[in-house]
Length: 377
Image (tube, rainbow, N blue to C red; front, side, top):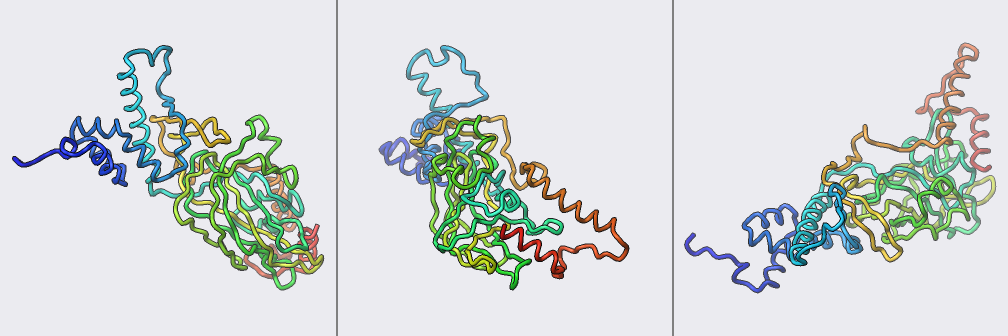
């Protein structure tokens, strides 16, 4: 102990800063700041925790300012000695980035989809709309549940599905997609895509236009309404009827809360019209939300934004079933009602009628013709 020495006192400040910036665990930074008052002041002054957050997720470089919503902003609060004001600002910023670093490195993962916003095309809207992909089942009662694109003779015409996440600050780790198998058509074809790609970003429409914007298809679903800040590589999709996993090379911080799935290349032709379709039964986005501790305001086309911090809130757990809030649109409710009506009508009919079992592969020819007509309409 008699030979102990403090490297902060012995090394050049730039060298000391590089050593502490090599820490990749926020807990280590907190421990370092607890060694002594000198270490604490050095960690705060050099923004060590902020540097860690930017290293983990470069998208955070767009932070223009940080607002602690728990602190009442009083007039004249920033008046005083400029050195004192700057030090108080650094301490508050350090507190925010310590909390942010903890949230960014949390291991808790759950489902992050909130709503289906729109599709580049839909064959039969709203019965085959993109909102069906929020349902994990590919059948509801006697009805198939899926999204279908419009038919195309050109195999290279892409499709886009756009979704809203559960918060404006989500860390996405993987996306799972299940292509739809048309069990009501001959040979039960699977309408997958060749490859898939994902984009994340934010919307530039004002909140008062959201009602008019939701669930619009085709030309009215304008790409210029979004700014995509991150695009993944292309992932090959197999023509199989199961939930296919697309794990991102590294977690991605989505600031703004919107995700788009690009379906590239068509593989399956429909026999009755000779056109190629892409159909998806279910989409699942996995990750973790930083809401309500952190939020985003004033996202600009330049990427600059205000980070809102609420230290009294607790992180929202997307994997907790009681807190899942998937919005039900009227089309979805009507679809469920029609399914139950069909079942009730069957039960009210003559004795001996067979109630449909979703696991039973037997369907009479009349039902198959009805499914085929719905699909091609």
